[in-house]
Amino acid sequence: MTSPTPVSVHRRSHLSPTLEVPTSGPLVDRLGRVHRDLRLSVTDRCDLRCVYCMPEDGMVFRPHSELLSLSELTRVAAVARRLGVRSVRLTGGEPLLRRGLARLVAALRALRFDDIAMTTNGMTLARHAQSLADAGLHRVNVSCDTLRPERFSRIRRRGDLGTVLRAMEAAERAGLSPLKVNVVLVAGRNDDEIIDFARFARATGRTVRFIEFMPLDHEEDWSESAVVPGARVLEEIGAVFPLRADQGRGSAPAERYSFADGSPGAIGIVRSVTEPFCGDCDRLRVTADGMVRNCLFSDDERSLAPALLGSDEDVALVLRQAVWAKRAAFGRDSAEPVMLRPRRSMSMIGG
Ligand code: SAM
Ligand code: SF4
Image 1: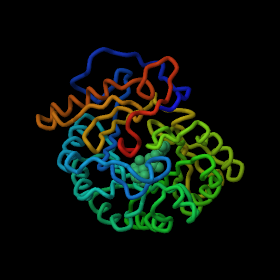
Image 2: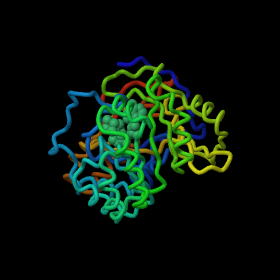
Image 3: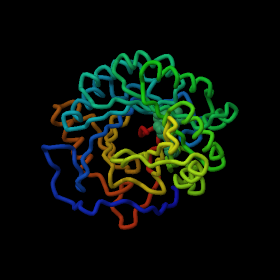
Image 4: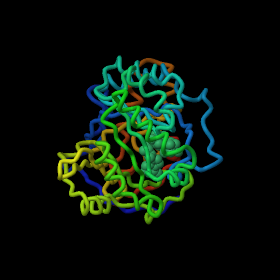
């Protein structure tokens, strides 16, 4: 278990706990945070083995029979939609490994979400981009932590950079835009590429989002010294390409910056570790094996399985109870918020 990381947390001072799980109205927690964003993990499997996420060998996956079926995923999404959830993001593991994904997207489109997005490693995206766009997917975030071909296999252990870059182009051709590129910075591995990525954002018009490394790696190698603070990223880029902060982040995890000289492209900073945004969190997660999680860092998981045998009201109650049980920050209400490694790692939860 990793030692606690002290962090400062934005608390919303006007929030005060109320008492009972509401049975009507939007999905709200005891601190008044209304939940509008659903992260739906469709598989825990992956075709890569990124150092900050999975071990090279020995990862044990859930048998297919224990995953929510496409119709169960659709049903949970439909109930969440009725409870006021507006956006849904497909994730995993690698979501493109899930058979029938386009059918799921089409079902989500029929539910009229404002935003249907997917986070992917891009390995097979070029092949699927058009059919997913046709089915109703709006946009993708493609993970890519290096622009150096030889380094790609050291960070992601499988796959290759060219495939991911071609996937980004295919996604844009298919209309999956705006395209965002997720970069997890790990000190000593890829933090010498910050300016290269800024140039890439300017050249392609894409948003590059730098994500702080969180203690969610299966191998438990995370340490505070491996985290590259968002502040450093902003300082480095700003010294070469002055940045302008865009309007408020709202409930989104990334702060967004444009280039002051009007260049295309943008920079996003996700400071989950150094400046957490728990006070504005509106996210709810459903794991591929059907557990509702109210926080990446909370081990409080509630199974949807019994409710899925019952009515939609039963499913709604599990979602409401899970949200209601959400703690102030990182799954805790402690006076001094700490980020402690949860039992399940990132790919098992759904990033
Ligand atoms: N396989 C897909 C991918 O890599 O984009 C989707 C799932 S992945 C778990 C979702 C996101 O979480 C990716 O952008 C990935 O880089 C990020 N991620 C994984 N492990 C992380 C960690 N320990 N800290 C911060 N971000 C992490
Ligand atoms: Fe797979 Fe995504 Fe985890 Fe990398 S970050 S191992 S691509 S699930």
